[in-house]
Amino acid sequence: MVKVQSLQGFLTLLRSPMGSFGEDLRKERVARGIALEDIAAVTKISQRHLVALEQERFRLLPGGILSKGIVRGYAGAVGLDPQDWTERFLAATSATGQSEDDDTNWTAFASNVGKARLLRREAIEVRLRWVGVVLLMLAVAVAAFFTVRYFGLRQGWWHALVPARGVAIAMHGIWFSARGLVSHAFSRA
Image 1 (tube, helix red, strand yellow):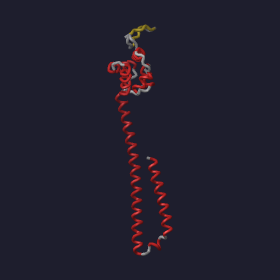
Image 2 (spheres, one colour):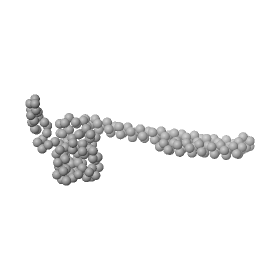
Image 3 (cartoon, one colour):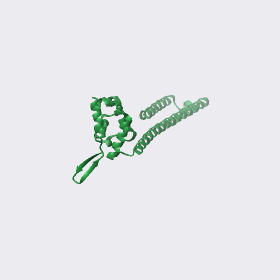
Image 4 (cartoon, one colour):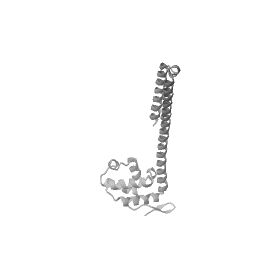
């Protein structure tokens, strides 16, 4: 703790005599000759999060367990004790009042990810159901056509009912309509 004299009296700052968390972290990194780019490349942590950590702008970090993971990754890449620096990070976030309710944010994040996956899965299932309905209707229509044709040929009235040229044109139209529907349904999936 360091006491600073102000106009109204003494003000107690919650800083260690060595410096602040971010300042100490940056000093350790610089003393070892490691660039932020190197840490970002090794840990796959965004450089803006590393800078926010060094500048103690904790609100810019993702929060919760992700922020702790960033501190552990940074400390590990620099060669420091991750557990010790995580504890110092938690103390620094509570001292600055920038700590958030970790469990609530993390739970909300995980819940939203789960909901998004469920919605995507339900959308795919609905599309597949409609494709199944269309294929079933197509199968029923084809079965009905061949059943009527079979009995029509046996009774002798089929050629009088449907001329061969008309059937060819109708089948051609049905084929292209069905193909268009199927390609449209799969283009949205």
